[in-house]
Length: 506
Image (cartoon, rainbow, N blue to C red):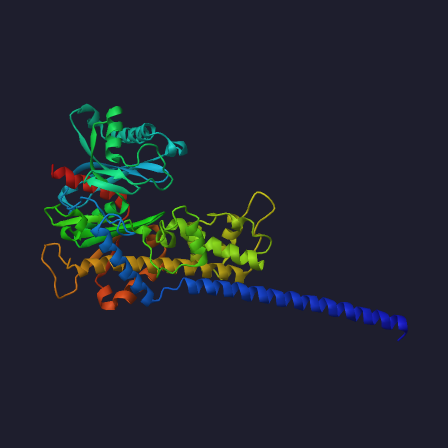
């Protein structure tokens, strides 16, 4: 072999070795990045851990806060607001009642006809009207006039006799989405706006009076017979079907719970008496905080972005508003630091671009190649410019589903701890009455929790994790007596039922 041939051969060998070294180096770097990504997710999982010991600490912590909130106003992170609701529907109600239900984007008019054929069967109809964004920050008069006109149109469309009977004064349930200090069964002062509402000159005012003034201005002959929030409505509907219903939990955009408490346990209401000896208490449990809550750096950062740093600590771990956002934050940090998810992580940096509904779809994807996960990642984070997640490999998609599982498992188990805390508070105080009024001392009794949650209804893995945690905390034998019952549209139907109960007492 001549020198020229030898030089060429050596050069080729050098180039080949360089290429091989580069490929090996790239492979090593890829393995290193992937190992780091897995380690970051494992660290996140460890921070989200909810062993049964921790759950029991949370149960005890919430019970302590419940006692403190019942003792004094401002004495607890839980507001524990008395509702003046001392009697719940039992299936004997009849007549036609309406609910005006506000939520973050619309007002819903629910018409409920009770006592059909002398049974618990009822008919109901729902009409919904979008609230213009500008009205959410408008004047009190403009806002309440708008929702009253929506109500009036619906009532006049459904009940022709209403216009022809000017002396007929119909009873209305008002389902209100923001925290209120209840003044009576049918009235309450707004504590603070939430869910995007910021209507002027309403905080501190009686929202039922604001509504009735608008009804008077617009010629609608109705009066508010019940003022309730979402869990109160869910509890009423649950009790209508099953008298062993003792509490209600809402897991939606936000979260809250209420339960039936003995009057003598509500120390801050000393001197107030009810015929039943009970009263429904609105917990406002989204504000619950404990050092035992399994929070990670992602959760702390999300909480600290709120000007009220201790506001909604519990809600941000379990409600639909935040679950998808927590997943996004984990994926963004992982992708940003380790250059996974291919082309770019630009869109992953935009807050709340991953909705919880999409997170659920990804988590439920059981296809071999997780194609739905890849599709959602690409479509959800595809911006108008060139930055996008153009494709993901299978192991990256598996990492995404693992993060989703960690977040939803923690949420479900924390909800379970909250439910058990309510049951423990009730049991500790001896609230063991059956529907007939007799006590069940010395033996376990059936307790029903009305549950309104899209996650619970449509997400089997959420139900599985929730029920598992209740059994772990209480033990199989006791947990067997705890029934979670779906209360669909309790906000609308249940509030109308509360209006029926109050109307029958007048």
